[in-house]
Picture: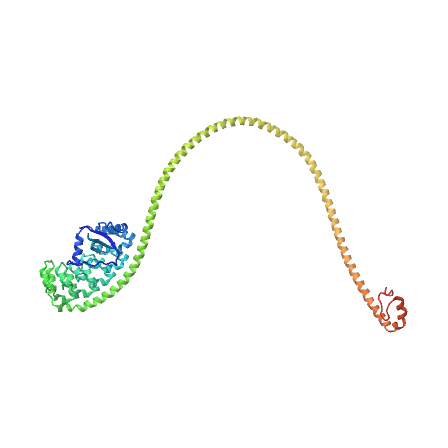
Length: 489
């Protein structure tokens, strides 16, 4: 029978085919069939590769590699892995969390799957099982089951396709006593809930290899289970007699007690359950805090991994570039060394030739230097004679400068005298102007007095007696004194 794998979205539930075989049997037959990793040639390549890789890592139990893979492809945790038959019908269908629970997973892998897709804890696979059902049936570790209960305590109240609760499966497969305790702490009613065949968890414990502690715990939770019969009218005591387990005498002793023996401890159990409820609430708060911290750490770890991969890539590139650069540098250095050696040889030849030319030039320069020295000596003698003449001229110039300074002193004294004379002249002019103003004021006052006297003396009488006589002579109207008259000169 051919098979194929492909991704399906989480909400596309498949209709169960109408046949006589139960979904549980179909799921078991599907696991016994061909490999789930067969490739669907019609599916998208990327999704097909992701599904095959996830299934492969889960089957091999490579949890660390699976964690790295989920960190890169986070959507893989919420995608359904489905196997089809040759006719296109669904053979089985599960989430990664369902498949992981079948392989005895670690707490880290379960925690990360729940973190990436929290709703997966409440999703059933094609056989109608929750992840918690599978974990209890496959005897997963106590830490894993406790984590799943803390993620969704309602899962302890969900039944599978045959009406069994997680407690039924845990009691049936001889799970650790701590798992049974956790399941009862969350849902104590599970101890008195029968499955589709009328079997209580105590019936399943009697039919399989459960420990005496599990029996005691189940009877404490529901003492009347000792007298309860299944669909075939069998009590737990009858089922226990059919079993051949090592702890049979100890368990039979527990089952032989009357119901009243166990009901006396119910009150103590109730108190302990109340305490457990309070502890569960506290644990929920702590779990939420731890989830937040873990999400932060996972995000930081992802960032660090990306950064590390980037740095590794840069390191490889820089290493490769360094190799190329070193090889190129060696080749360049060899060429430069040959070039420098050739240039040194050429420079040596040039220097030797230049040395011979310079020796010849030095001999010529020595002759020239001797001539120049002789000329300098003659020039110094001429300069000394010129210095003597310059000294006499300098003395004469000093004498002339002294005379000029004396003349400048005289001129400065003369200028000071002229300045004093100008100041005295200005002062005299000011005094003269002041005197002129005073004279004008005196003259003005005299004229005013004279006018007042003339007016008073000749007022009326003068006009009548002498008006016609002097008026006709000097052309002045009668009775009007004229200051233009020669009298007023």
